[in-house]
Length: 569
Ligand code: UGB
Image (cartoon, rainbow, N blue to C red):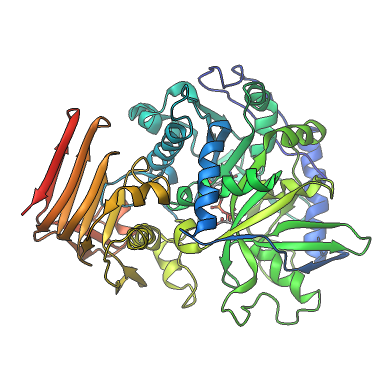
């Protein structure tokens, strides 16, 4: 097994950050070793060598959570308690080639009702957890690491600095930059030249698996351990729903004492997310691990499933879909990395020109994946997974409009269109569970994708961190019409007997308590289609295929401390 390249830039040293590091830790054995490893992996790929030789796949069993039931609430409460002993790690070094967006993905609005970008949403969610977790105690500061790459580092830093770290203390945030690796032109691992500068070697990111070696070599894990932290939560750049699943998933980790807990959702066959699989070796070894989406079908076909990756009678693949949200117990994680140095098994995935597999369509490189971490663990390690319902846990923004429109009917689009609509859907369903009357959605097509359009409901994470919290803020007879927009931009906003048909935006300072009720009716915000080819529209709107026309709204702002009543007759 080869070791990954890693380079660390520790930024903003503080109590929970490692000492600043400028030296690069290069690929063990340097370029010579990289090329040697590449030759071996390329030869295996050409020969069609089965990386799972000797292993038989089967469907594993894990914890299944249904939003809002008794079990879920119990795990949410446990998770919130544990959060003060957690650190968060966002892997955000990816180019987002499939999305084709010009900016960094974390700067994209998760939804355009408030325009909150993914990074702001993530930070505000971590801060809400921090607040709830240490209530009544001295405030913990949850550390937040962002793994960047040359493609994303500068713009991520700029986004943070120009927005005052979205309310987080700058000392809580550490950026670790992953190094790129050399691209390869052919099966002999000849180095590819940069098409823009023929005097340079072309490079690309080495994959999200670099995060383990970077955390290890930066020294930050020890700092966290010494500070009494217990959990490290890894997540990806564009999932606007994820933090609805975090408290309960962390609760599962702590209650079940999982050293590794992977979050999963029901998976449609051939969906571009890996499958959580039990692999049992003929020598008796067994592990529960992600099998990446491009490897699952051939593995199944070679193991007595002649149809490969297909849906079962449930309409889903029997293998839960990996959403690459990992919760690791810090102590055992550190012990393991001390042995491996954070090295993660590499792979290569060349796109060949034809069946002879002699030439590539474009250059390739070695990669590694963060979810392969458990591969080196002993069989005694407590490795589990938690399956969540997709509607509240997973709606990534990965595909451009054209590719999303080609996704087979019934499979998720994973586009900016579906990602935003999924947030409104989840929030509407949650409000319904909390007692609101919410009508059925209507179906509309944007950028060639048919999506459910629910009332456009958004709230700040500190308002609705958990289901119990949301329920405590909604009472009486509340209703919202399908064409409505409701944006709750405050913490202590209590909704009682509200009937909303139009647009209502409530903003309040932390020490203002606002009771909202009565009948609000206005022309509201209409949804207008935007053609993704229409260059007169901003890219962030083109990629989702719609925009809001803010015709009329009620907007109330409470910036002073005190108790307030907003009630329309
Ligand atoms: N990323 C990095 O930080 N560095 C890199 O070098 C590459 C990526 P993609 P992918 O949950 O939807 C993963 O490209 O790799 C970051 C899982 O492997 O969005 O195709 C990048 O910025 C798959 O099993 O996804 O597929 C982003 O935040 C499945 O779980 C993250 O890594 C799938 O995600 C993922 O990169 C999914």
